[in-house]
Image (cartoon, rainbow, N blue to C red; front, side):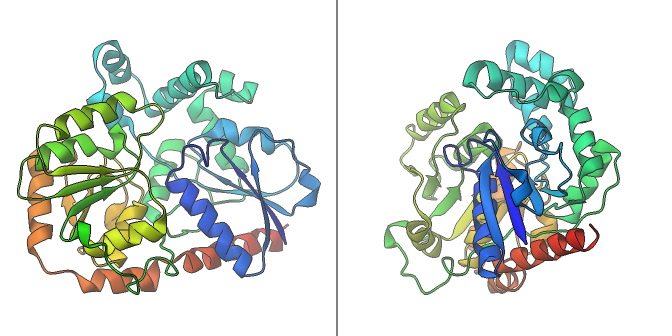
Length: 362
């Protein structure tokens, strides 16, 4: 079995949750004996060397369409997000007016065109340019052998959007127990801190988190680097943080150091405008942080009643959830639940089952 994984060109230069999902999936599939190559979407590829193609991010259809013109079956880890509420609520001026009157597909199409014009991200296929965003996703969904959402809720949201029922396997988001385990020594500098791990950008909502906790009794540490197109947002976060003494920033660090901070911290907050899961919430939870998560997205399917939920638009809601999470004992059940259900080996086994089912029928 030879598998080709095709990824966005910015997978490493602008790392996100999909970066971790891809690299960890590959790591553990290789441990299961699967031959896998990773190629960028703009590379010239000899498709005949492979039995199956695996894509990620159906929300970026222009990265996928150029590679499905052959007879090799393919499947997609959909990572289907919906940032439209954020786009509408947080844009200003003319942009706010435009986004108020556009659908999710139209918003994503404009963003793709903007990345082409301002960032140099090429439009790779005429089909996307002329058919638009939603029609392109529908086209891919119809041709895919299987969709691989991270939750049943994500699949239902995607099908509601595309109106294209497709076979699917749920593939969990996960943690790597080789790294995230309690054998590490805690970094005492972050004892009982409130932490937030993730790229600094409007969708992750660090600014409202700072507003909720600035000059409170809590020490808040935000870990991550700003997204390429969100430096103004990052500067706004820094300006607000500088009006108090309890908000700290740590640039992106490797997992070996991050796990020591998780172990020392008391609460992890991901008050995003949308999360399919939130990998850092899983990582923090397995390291015995109580977790505060957004109500927006698929988080409840993962965390049930083991998390503290907040409304990202409501600063008081964020503050109240943090206070509750801080004052409650550590939820040991959450850590055990994550180790049992949400490891990358589990995800790799589920992915291999999907591969096998496709190749069996082809």
